[in-house]
Length: 246
Image (tube, rainbow, N blue to C red; front, side, top):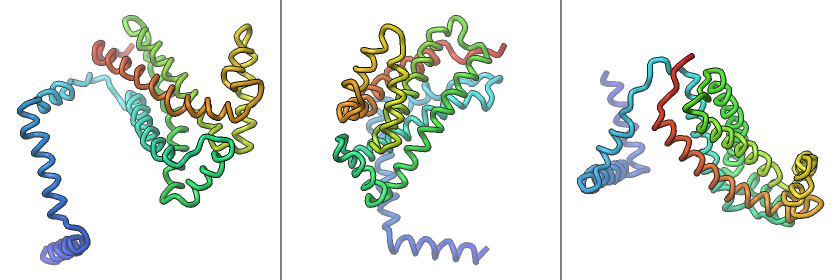
């Protein structure tokens, strides 16, 4: 027991020599005091949090109900890593590929941030598909939740659009030809295919205009649409509750 305490005190001293632990703890306690002190007395944060979080969970809820929450968590990771990548990325034909190389090879932990963004995107698509399958097999799309099901379908489409628009941003040969083939598939849609193809590409072929449009969609249009649909999704879940099993 004495040896354990000795190791603990030595570890504390080692950290304290390099980092002012007491100052950090004091700052944290001060921040907590502000939040749960004066601000809480005026804005009643504690009461609002208890009302929002202390909601009973039905007994039939199991681990498959976590797919939606995992998808939302991955979306937050994508947002955080995407913001960091945007600080160095240049959405131009001349600078896109070189900026991605710079992020990967020279930016501090850039390879890690880009890797997290890449793999979290793949896992997010998997999670949203599993979430939709869970809702379908539990028949949670039936009235009165059919509107929420449609919102979920919209979120699935936006998630796939995130993957498609983000694939072009490295601006390498693989991204160029994958976007060419993918946009041609959209162009094969009857009646609206031709104007849809031109709208996506910004012309007849994949050019720098396409890169600009895909970047704008990836970092502005799709995130805003996602936030709006997520707000509707969560509000309807809070209003209607979790569906009962079949």
